[in-house]
Length: 374
Image (cartoon, rainbow, N blue to C red; front, side):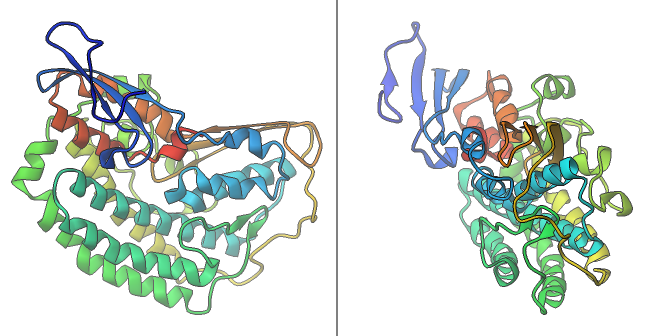
């Protein structure tokens, strides 16, 4: 295999085939892109996976229904809470476990804090991909506050392992509610700086508008979900169309942009952070008293059958499919992760654009490679 960036002679006259990755700062992980260029114009992009493959689904089949949940933190590690939530809900669905109201409130608050933290990292990394380093530090200012809140209750800052079948692992820290309210105040006072630094920049807009276009029909055809699809006008927010936990009781908007370009996908995520704050505000002072976990057996056995649950992660729809033979471990597990389908549209989105536009388009896909290459 050639080194990253080495030009290949295996191309037609006037074309160059170059390798971007698997070690490249713009790929945000070990993703290998084989890019065919004519001058600076992209003719074709072939994503190559397999560098980080850990066979997570196969590994889960040898773990108990309590253990396998935590392996999924290592897929989309920026949506660890939400991944664990999806797995716990699938087990609960199979066993018909009723989750206490307190646990449902805590879960949704944690999910939305996770969504904000993930979008913060995406925003800073996207700006850095396009040559602006300062926003990265601004993004981590708020993100670190969220991580401090998570650490106090969960004992971790990235792979949380907090959701369990029946509820959550432990009750929230006594200062959790006050610290979340302090964060809301901080975030609201600083979010306008994001627009001043990046959104309103003429240079940034010229790099994003009309770049990496994906029509509504093509987004559906490729199976795109999350902000990628909603930036093309697709209604696909699982929290709205298939509400779970207490989302159906909450007032929030599904953010839709219709231009289908990189700037639309950018705006969706910026506005989604504000919607997440609205969700948290509705819940943080209303967390009911009571148990934070339903009573379950130490060893869980699922009844024989097939069970499926879907949730909305920071990158789109995550589906968890379990086939049970009635034992203590799953017979088969399959994860429908959002990143794989979103990445499949990259070649279609960048053909005919410049190589510099490839970085901007790929940045608005918000790829987390372990989520794609499982």
